[in-house]
Image (cartoon, rainbow, N blue to C red; front, side):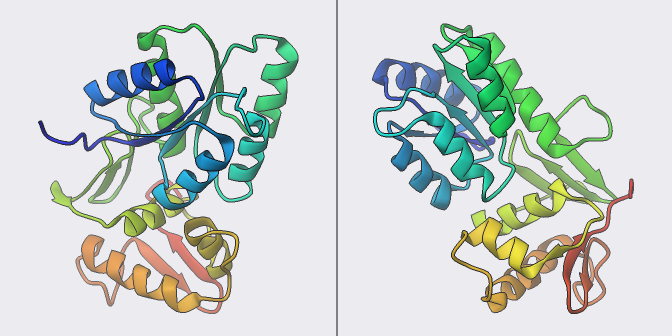
Length: 234
C-alpha cells in the first residue's frame, strides 16, 4: 500500500479510539496523519512535523487545548480545527478568539469532518477560484490539500523545510517577510539571527521553482529586508 501523500494532519486527542478512527478515515482519503495524546506531545510534534492542519481536542490530560492553540499561534497561522465534547458557546468563543479556525463538537460525522478540513485548507491557500485549496501564480501551482507543487504542469519535489518555506510565502502573497519572521516560523521561536539557514533554503527553493534562479520570477529579494512571493493577484 502506498503511503498517503496528501496534506499532513496532526490529530491531538487522549482517547485512543478517537485517534484510531480519525487516523483511519483521513488516511483512506489520502491525508498524511500524525497523532499526539498530550498537549506537550502535540507541541513537540508540531515543531518538527510542520503539519498543514491540526485537529485538536481541548480536554487533554496535561494541559488545556486552549494553551496548545496559544503556543501554535506564537509561531504560525497553521489551520486549527477543534474537536471537543465541550459544546458551550463560551468554549467555542474562547477557542476561536485564540486563533482556532473552526470548532466541531463531538460526536461528529466523518463527512462533516472532511468538509471542515477542506474549508480550513482552502482558507489557508487563499485561492482565487474558491473551489479548491490551490494557490496559483504564473506557472507555479501549489495544492495544499494534496501537498503537491507543480511548475509548468510538472511535479516538483520539495523537502519538508522547502515546502514549509513556500507555504509561508503563499500565506502572505506580495508581502515582504523579514529573515527573522521566516526563521521563527520555520525553525522555531529560538531562531532569528541564523540568516544563513534561510538563504540556503531560499536558494534551493529557487532552483526548483524558478526557470532562472539568478533572475527569479516568483521569489523576490528585498535587499536588507527579506523576501516576498510575487503573485498575479498582487
